Length: 188
Figure: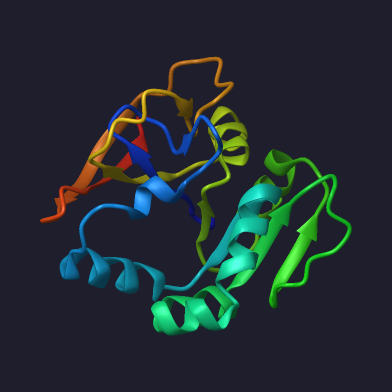
């Protein structure tokens, strides 16, 4: 069975988007070559990227551009090369290469995809999708980069969750810029 991972950057107070919907705060910390290398290494893996419409539109507006290729050459190349699935009821078409538009229920579709052969799948951003999949017990691993900032208000990646979800920390790593990488699995 294919593994489903959620990867998100969150503030110390648990938000992945500010109250205005902005995620730029996650990139304002001081430069750290070790963290930059970690991001490049993490992006070099394979798999299928899973997005909701908002995250897809944000990613598709940056990663296939010359600016992305200049600033983050390895990551930009990999983001464009990887297979992507975007869940949306409102999008009519997708333009980013290697992207498939799915209009069906995310939990139903991911359940099918998990049963098929293939590489791991990674939900990036996409809090609504992550929350739906968490509530359906479809997520195998949560990878969180905690950014040392307090936003005060915003949106959590578990917005709308109706029940407790116990997790077990399986790995962690800290960086000089204050970021902490935490990896959790659902408790059995």
